[in-house]
Length: 162
Image (tube, rainbow, N blue to C red; front, side, top):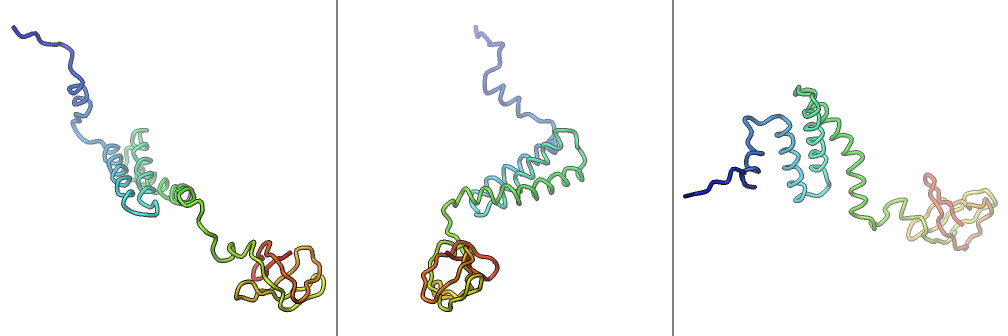
């Protein structure tokens, strides 16, 4: 005689949880977000991840009762836009914390030599690396030809030096 267990097993319970009569829109949005997350692993830049976050936003909109396609697309566009301009830069900064400064930011902290001096409050010419720049003393004092200076900050096309 075979004894039957009235309690369903774990696999039967999990199987029933995934039985859908039809896919709801939030299911499709969630699958879209999942696909974007998987594809993001193969691409740089976190663009597809932002699309995935937008898909999660649209899925949440459907769950909350915004069942119209235009409302879901609007939420998708808004969340994608916000994540592209807030989440993406944060993730890029976290991924490359030691990225070297470029352009003007790279000038700060470098040293140079005054080529043409100036009186107090005036603008001199300083050579930093192979480039000549307009330079002004941070203290407002004079800069003498031949002085060694360090760049404190950059204002427009002028170096503020000490």
